[in-house]
Image (cartoon, rainbow, N blue to C red; front, side):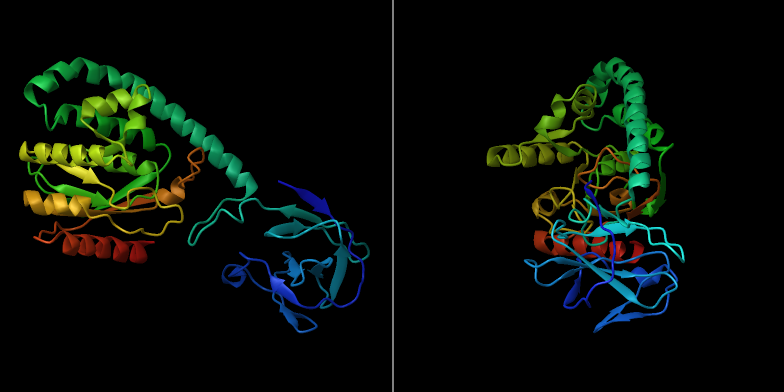
Length: 363
């Protein structure tokens, strides 16, 4: 984080100001002071917060507008040393007789945000990282303990329940529940829409966060996830995925994709269910991406229902790309009624519409 200081002093009127990208909607949550007018610019600012603007001419000196507390006038200062090309925040103390040096702090979070994504302040970011480290410590300790149960039960699982592997999925449910219980709460709606455990189905969901897998495992259903082959190389987690029957996939390999679909068909014929994230990857900005039709083609070919599931809140608890941080919150799981059909594109559009509408309502 870069920090710079400027000593304000009276100057000529500032003109040609433009808001920096990202400054918006400040009036929704704070009480505002009266409007401060400077030239042709109306500055709507809180009593204890100040906005920084930059001139439209980026080659000229930077102009800083400061609305003073208990004063309707504005001050203007120039500096050739500081270039404002991102969102900045600054805080200064003011007394009736003296003007202190305002401190300008450059926010590195300005360029990473997307629509609907809220990033914590620096103090909250530290707490989020501490919480994230604690989460990984808890999930590792729980995994080390429960993986031993899976090792012991694995020969019997292969002998009597090779395809569904209910015992292993029960252990995975315990692992996910114990791992997330201290950090966030899950609210599940629509459990009555789940097919019977022995009925094969294609499950699909939006994908927002690394925590989506933990959240879905709490449902206790024996569906088979599809995962990148690289994840299988991780100790403990990779071993557990192998014993659970997770299906490996090389994303850019067309032959691997074909083998994955064939394996899914074989599992469905044996009574197992499969799970897809039709977006193909996690959403970076919280928006629902385009759906690929592979899961829906599989459902039409095998004539089994598609069960859409909407996940709300995992992207706020642990945003994609910031897996070291973990925020408190509530995650909602909405299970929709199964849909069936003979056309993959129609099923794809139906499922996406259901999930998109729920995100709009719940988000």
